[in-house]
Image 1 (cartoon, helix red, strand yellow):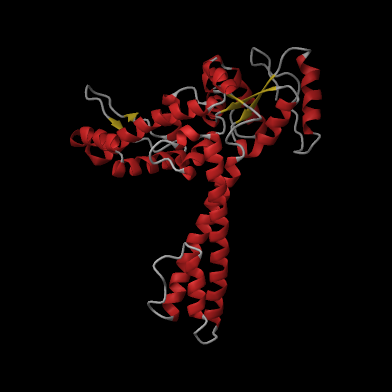
Image 2 (image 1 turned 180 degrees about the horizontal axis):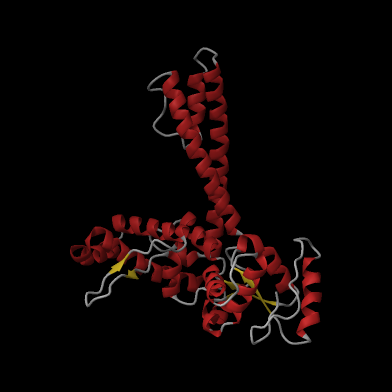
Length: 335
């Protein structure tokens, strides 16, 4: 879908297959309608699906902006035709990008996003962790069925499944024993893969975000998770925007003279979990964080004091990410 400066459609919508010829077809199509005028591409912010297309357009010299889903939905509900379809979504995305009130919420696509290489590694590690947790749960039930007390305290090390397999070798050969031996081999393979990904993410963190890694409680996994979720930190305009994105900014819930706020249960939950992990660690070991909690705990309670700490940590994370940016990206953020 292509629109002019006034929001009017130009020509007919075009649908292309996701293949190497897509960019050439799109450039030919837009060239037939733009008449030499500059063009800005707007893509709904589902980067896992459209990142390849956005990168190809940027390589071709085009300007590409990511439009948050909420802006597209608002445009579709309030100013567009009724209904839900791909053409209507495309029209709403274009209109949302053209709306000057939305300019500060749009993010330009970059082909050198620091988090682009981290995202698949973080996702794969999370998937393997989930698979290992489910496998350990099944193994504990099966071990209890075979012999109560056989299951060890922990099965998350490389040594544990080997020792368990050695103990299982002393039992009679039964279907349950064979399944458990196969589980031990699978568990060792999963742990080996998780450990390898953890080491790789640690190397990425030390190279990409050393300032963020220096924040107390921000280990390699937390730091790379934050960077992977943001992609390019320069797209976050300030710490308040990061807090809203991560769900650490409180929401006002009052209509009288008594001002009240509540926890925001929206936002990016992975970002929120990463910040919460840092907050829990600092609450146990970091004196400044402990002092901040003590300052607010009497009035806001323990949970309220933790929310204050998480909001404060959002400012710290934004500042350290800003320090980690390259000079070129830092200049673009400032402009």
